[in-house]
Image (tube, rainbow, N blue to C red):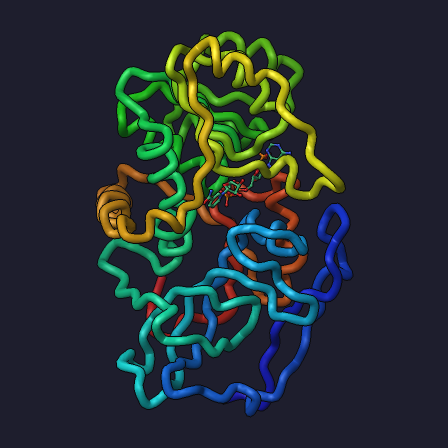
Amino acid sequence: MPSHYTRIVLNDRPEGDINASTFRSEKVPFTELQVGDDQVLVQVTWLSLDPAMRGWLRDVRSYVPPVQIGETMRAGGLGIVVRKGKNVKLNIGQLVSGTLGWTEYAIVNAKDVESITVPQGLLDIDYLNNLGMAGLTAYFGLKDVGQIKAGETLVVSGAAGAVGSMACQLGLRAGAKVYGIAGSQDKCEWLEKEIGVTKALNYKSSSFQKDFRDIGYLDVYFDNVGGDILDMCLIRLNRNARIVLCGAISAYNSVGRPKGIQNYQTLISQRARIEGFIVFDYAKRYPEAIAEMSQGLRDGSIKRKFHIVEGLENAPSALPLLFNGGNTGKLVVKVAEPLKTKL
Ligand SMILES: NC(=O)c1ccc[n+]([C@@H]2O[C@H](COP(=O)([O-])OP(=O)(O)OC[C@H]3O[C@@H](n4cnc5c(N)ncnc54)[C@H](OP(=O)(O)O)[C@@H]3O)[C@@H](O)[C@H]2O)c1
């Protein structure tokens, strides 16, 4: 084991965008990592970067407590069990996923990690993407909250991201016409050529308003971004339409209160529904979603794309990519070579 390990802690709560002083890196003596009887020491191999992490930096009430100043930045990840307490049944060398944080080594309660055995034809990092929070969010958001049906028109914003690209594919698999909204021509081409959406629209293009109207009316809007795009969708609802409030990334860095929506009255005239959800509430049903999406990944009918950043030290400068559109697909950080799994 090394004499020291690196962790990245919250240094300062950002007012708007994450900046160079938001996080700081610390070298900590390895001897500080004392494993309790019910705990494991995990060597972190991969970390997931998620838009929600911006929310965890705000000192406000939410579905999880805020990260405290001086605390290791919270993050989901994968790692290998390298030590364990006397009550722990997990094997040394076991691949696990859990909330490990921006650190090379993490002490966690064994009950708070999931053991993963990567089946033939899948990657360990699939468990941070389609088989992890992003995929599960798309799955339950679209199927349960959105109630998507064959023949309906689905619009997905943030469509070239991790959740969005999975929502598009699940919409296509359900037999819907799928329109993806993304922020560059390259992303739109990827969505049309690789993911197979009916049409992709670039919201930064000067013709976006017209392109959007040309779609016609929509039955389900899977909203990853909030703001003006949500407002545009609100006036294009079919009768009994559903708006799935998955995320509102356009407002995550805003200082003060985000701008409100204007066009909500269409919800009344069209007997439509707008509903937020948090994926963790579906935890009991994760196996059903993982089974379907694993099969799709194995037979090639579900596509995935990773944006890989090398090195824990680059996590703070990589996180803002989510807010400036620098990622296509799932943004992950490679912290260490996996000991037990091969890509
Ligand atoms: N409800 C839940 O339980 C749950 C769970 C997980 C994630 N989420 C939400 O799902 C959404 C997607 O998450 P993800 O992990 O898949 O991230 P992602 O889509 O891979 O990355 C974020 C993308 O958002 C787009 N974006 C950034 N600022 C924008 C703006 N102002 N207007 C429009 N688009 C903007 C960027 O793409 P462009 O280049 O296209 O702008 C960026 O690539 C987030 O809102 C997240 O909070 C919700």
